[in-house]
Length: 328
Ligand SMILES: [Fe+2]
Ligand SMILES: [Fe+2]
Image (cartoon, rainbow, N blue to C red; front, side):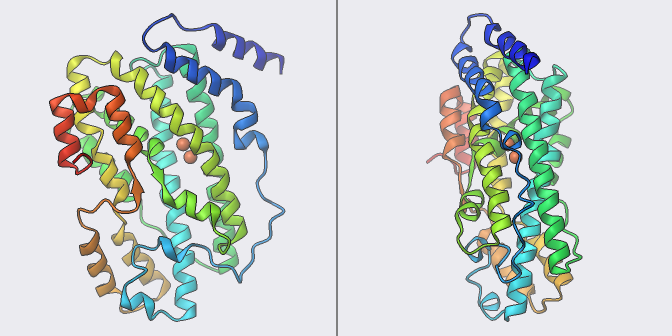
């Protein structure tokens, strides 16, 4: 407790007066509130919440094939298995983002690889974010383990398309600073955009109560992370060189599509493992329907951040946002 007070006093008094002062003031406030805000500090692992086998594991409204005629003919058993598969897929994607995108970015920051975040308040914010994300990893592993056991499911969810696309994008560029800015852009987008998954699952009255509580704890932390990453971006962007700023401006809108695209490759594998037949047409119809579309996510936070940073005033940034269909 005493140690924590000392750390907080250090953070309070850190940071020279500069253009990033407003953002550092916001981060300082978030650091001050972390002990009471963070879900990990509130401490519940929901051990006292029983798994109710009669409740669905996921919301039908969130399935990317919910209107397809083949899905509408699923029998009760197939529907229940599909919703369990969707819950596992959702959690694996969450796990991939936390461990493959956000936590490595936090490590980059603490290793001094990200410009503009070398001050005490940024490091404290990032360290707290790492604790939050690690807690989400634990909640996710716990929730999927219980679901697998209670449903008797032994399926493997393929690695998330989002992390694959991030790695493929990193491989297009040779310089380490470029790869680091790609990781930063993906982390910022993942933290700033609003997933209707979190909101719909957390507020569902139908879905498994254990799942609802797990997602709600995550949603509460992520509401703060959205503010954190917006302000981290405001500190990083002005600290970059002109070349780096142009690179970041061109990259920032790209991950939005990676998030928006449902992973039908993963769904093909899940259906096959669940033994649900005749789903090839469902997969190809829905993949065609979603190709190039941005449905299902609210990316307005990414666009407003780009405006705040002045990215949409740069021709390279405006072109990038327009070509991704994020600006009209
Ligand atoms: Fe998280
Ligand atoms: Fe987060």
